Length: 426
View 1 (cartoon, rainbow, N blue to C red):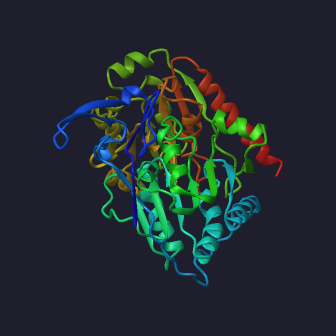
View 2: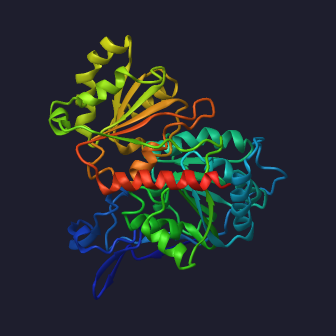
View 3: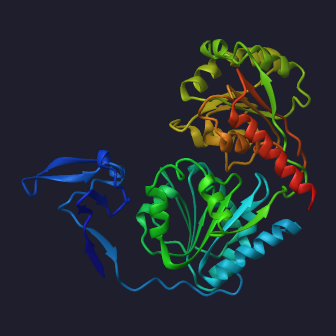
């Protein structure tokens, strides 16, 4: 029931890893093999999943495909969609029911992309199909799991991400980070890629390779994004990719437009692990001090150092303010994000790991050194989209503190304004 295949394929131009698709010569290396007493090539690109050598085959399942139950009604979600959401939901369901084709769902931050998927996923599960929703960020998988388990209570659901407690991928519905797709081959009838523009998916060729291989040859493929990259825009312009557009949030209010605030002493302030004076001036005049504050910084070291530096100052100004910092390598990352979601923290200093895919009901958003290279247009649009997501508080403030405007900042503001203008016409 298994077929052995070469792990490392040799060509005249070099090698290709059958597991991750890597072709870059610099990501291959030689290592002595104890079994063969020879030196073999191995792939460094996916070595964290366990080393594969030239002399060791990979195994592909060729046995019978699993049979999933055909159920009467899979989706238990009873919410209502707006007219714009319903239009997108109908298009998504049509592609999923057809079982073949691609569709880009271009929806603004906070448009309710998850709810738009429910009808199509429900019909697919009812037809006995296997569905995967993949996203670049582990935080997003953790947030989506309880929502999908509530929406599909009788469906076996697997959640796969780095550090997940359960490693089995035996669910009919699989929620996973895109890196986990390297484990699959021709496994899914429906493949949904959330945040297709996000790092690392759009910069790591092995992830689109894995996503393509994980889907069956004849499958429905749905791509979700609020900020499509040039590659997707070109395909749209040339008629190579169908799309549906949702320019308005589910509560009908416009996206918060960022305010650009110049600070000539930005670099010096950050060297001292402090926000610029302009930030504290805004803090004093803040319109809604009861909101939580999400503070984005450009690099990891600054997050922890700034927490220590401004914690005492914020407590003096705002009272018993609880502050924390979080970044990708933080072992307490999951707990801190949950504390912020539970409103046990008032201020959370973060890197770009929280730029997308997470929802907090009432926050103001501040970006320090918004001109830094890590904050490209897509990142800034997504960061701004963390504010105003709740119908109870749809107008959070978004501020970009900078030492000089960049093309990315200007483009982000222009993009948000364009979305709001299109939403008015609906």
